Length: 208
Ligand code: DQA
Image 1 (cartoon, protein in one colour):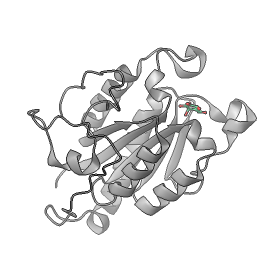
Image 2 (cartoon, helix red, strand yellow):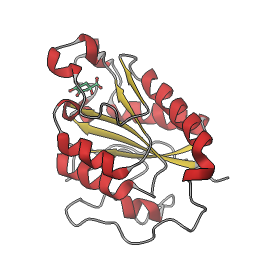
Image 3 (spheres, protein in one colour):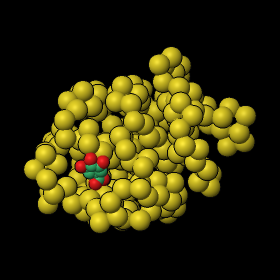
Image 4 (tube, helix red, strand yellow):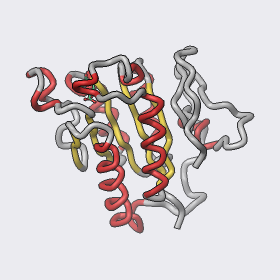
């Protein structure tokens, strides 16, 4: 059986980890966090696809393209979690099993962080466990995908093959790279931290 593909999606300001309050978010930089998730995903025999953006519409469009291209989603949408109904709708449209993750204990912080627009849509919500929360999320997704695999996962080659690239979302994959996967063209992502509009250059985690 082929490996499940999991999109690890981060929203606004998460690329600034390492500069944010360590009391809530710990000491890892975003690049280090993605590397850690990448290692854990390999442990679960999952193929991760990483995407981070500070542009709400880019995340909406990413979710529009996700169905059939990834088997599961782990989402930490940052502050959008608390007010972006557009993201909720986009995730609902995606119809991909999802686990919501927050590094910090959102339920014990300011009142505005205690609501999530994704409520009721996700398999699970993991919050307040720091990076370990992503390990829990990968584990939950993996168990779920194994359980539903025969029903949900199409055989290789039956996935939609149309080009899902969007002109609004910058192309962030290096087509020349050896570990380039055409799937990433259709999602407009890279297997490593993305670079939108020349944002911080992040080294890719080791290829899977
Ligand atoms: C966060 C919690 C959000 O409230 C906050 O806006 C973030 C990060 C977390 O991971 O704990 O940016 O999603």
